[in-house]
Length: 416
Image (cartoon, rainbow, N blue to C red; front, side, top):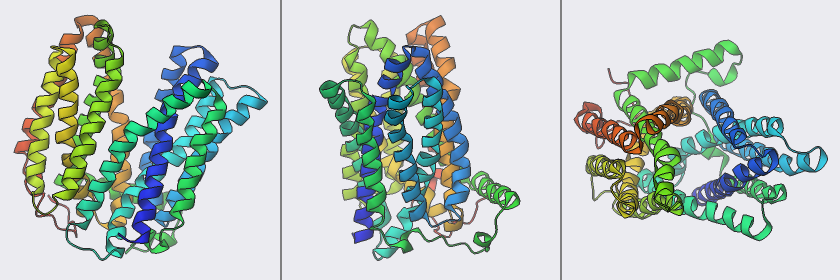
């Protein structure tokens, strides 16, 4: 890998590590400052809604401006929004309004940055020589890093809380990581972020251009069977995972007097994904994408069914690890397939819409699942989620769109 690729992986790691630390510090700080559990829920809902909207619009920006530049500016915005919290706390005191305002500001940094980093991958591979299987390997390495940092980030956040307590000043550490990520991105070649606009849209501006760009992105996504299929499948999977992690498993393990197992289950998924991502990167060219997809879908179906039955705590933990092991390579395959199937000049908008769907999907399942669990019991809610996953697996395995994963055309003409 060349200098730009190493710089990308370093910047990506620092940004994700900072988010992991903040995921622990931020909710605890909200609770400590407001004393209201509902405040954390309101904040999460508002910021998620804003982030979903920003995610769609961010794709337009990413397809017009150098993507390395977008990544750098996004990290700086994220750093400012986080560093402002201890400053506001010292000057005026934090309340729910300040948390919402600064959380929304952070969304304007996080979503464009997330989309920009996705779109940088093909150009980085091109700058490194564009060898066969290079994109698959790079995505596999990045997924392995993500799996490791999902474990390390929250752990580091917990260590900070243990050492210094719930203190807004600790957020300067998270802000520092974002600044470091931005600085490291400067080591990437500007060529890595160049946008291939064949329609001359980069020279134009205005509401009409933005609307036209959004329409073009949505038209491609809805008209390309594979990209649409990946978007819908990913949205269902993330919605079910979030419902399990935020509602079903915490309530189940609390009832079993094992509340700490809820965190262990999340770690199990991450640990399994880490191991399988390394295996995927090492077997590029030796195992077909379709094979990884089938293994992943079957594994997800089995794993979520076992969790949904809530038969025993150790079975739930084992199923979580199993899901991570089988889902990791499948996620990498679907990510590479989307990148290859989408033309460069549309890639930001399409990936922006997908990221927005990832944020919006859990909002559609959280309340209904909680209502079922409350009215009909955890077992009914768990079985309901298992049924949704099994039906999704059957449809995905039979869908023609997912049978061409090894025969993608990089030019990516839309399929009828």
